[in-house]
Image 1 (cartoon, rainbow, N blue to C red):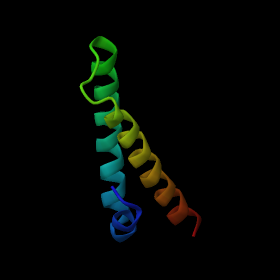
Image 2: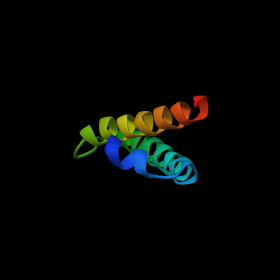
Image 3: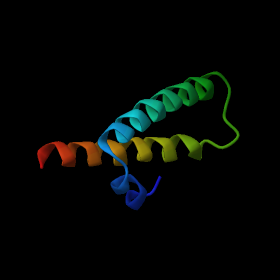
Image 4: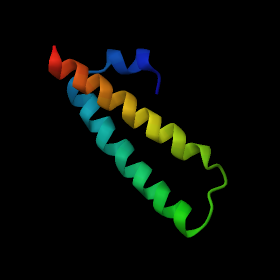
Length: 63
């Protein structure tokens, strides 16, 4: 998810997306531990998306 897309979403939507992405990340991480993923770059992309959304939520809380 791009930063420009994240800025357009509401805070409730961001929180919902954050929860979903965190769950997907942990599921993929567990699957990768059991047997290697076909595309392990997915883990990096999900982790970065989680960080982007968390950063935007923190920025909104501080304003």
